[in-house]
Image 1: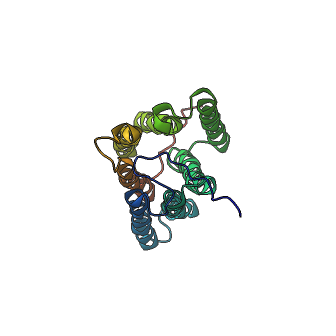
Image 2: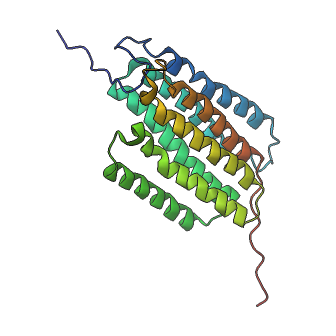
Image 3: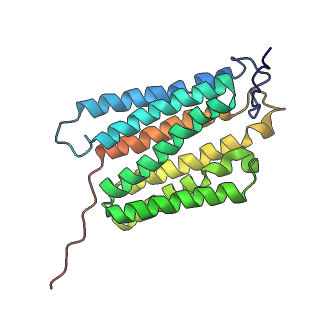
Length: 228
C-alpha cells in the first residue's frame, strides 16, 4: 500500500490532512476570481485603440485568476505540488506586472526593463538564500516585491505621473497584508482560524487596484530633447 501524501501544516486554520481543513483560507480565494472577472469586463469594454487594451493587460488578468485557482488548490490539498500551483502564478504575475509598468507606463527601454527585472530576480534569490524560510512566518519572500512596488512609487512620482498615488496606496495596503500574513501562526491560540484569509482578501483588492490602474494609465511623457 502506498503511503498517504504528506501534508504541509503551515497555517493556523489547518488542523489535519483533510481537504476542507482550511475552509476560510480556501474560500477567500474567490476574491481573486471576482477581481479578475471585474477587470476582464472592464478590459473588454475598452475601445480597441485604447492604450490599456493590450495583450499584456489581458495576461495579467488571466494570471490573477490563476492565482486564485492555484492558491485554492494549495489550501485544499496542502501538498508540495499544490504549493507550486500557488507560488508560480504569483511569481509570473509580479514579473509581468513589473515589466508592463516599466515598459508601458514609465516607458523604460527594453534593455533597462530587462536589467531591472534581472536585478529584481537576483534580489529575490538573495533573500531566499540569506533569510531563514520561517522568517516573518514566510512573509520575507514578499519583501523584494514590496520594495519593487515602493520603488515604482518613487519613480512615478519623480516623473509626475498621476499613477504614483494609486501605487502608493497599493504599497501601503501590501504592507498591511504582509503584517496580517506574518501574524497568522502567532495568533493561533487566541484566534484559531488565523489571519491568512485576510491576506487573500486584501491582496485581491491590491492586485485589482494595480491592474485597474494599468487599464486606465496613459504612458508617461518622455522628456523633450533639448536644443542641439
